[in-house]
Length: 129
Image (cartoon, rainbow, N blue to C red; front, side, top):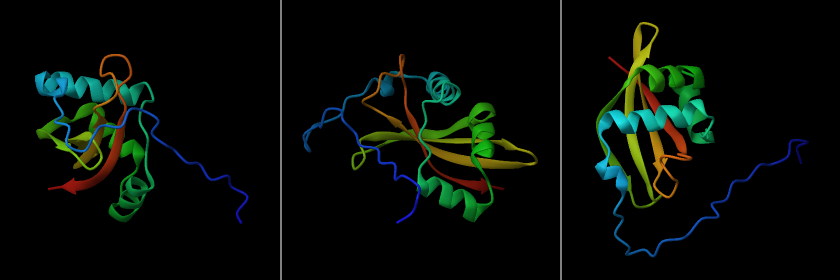
């Protein structure tokens, strides 16, 4: 067994019934306000980088600082998509990183308060031409 302590994260919030229809205030947000919420979450440290994101970053040649640049200086691409499997909203942000463009997919937890404590989870990223 390794000397490193294993860190586990468990969601302790309410569990929605499978057939519940999500009616989120996210639908009422403009793209600009949604991007502000995502940026504010990142700046305040309300993000959780997963092993999947780290793996994709290593495979595709970018890092968390590159993702931060894309999130801070980029723009939303497309419209948010609700993921019923994970009960969150996925947003795509494309932004400049040096002389390239990086697209980052982040999840915004629908159960968190967008104004007080939004939580984002970077899911993946990839370079765009």
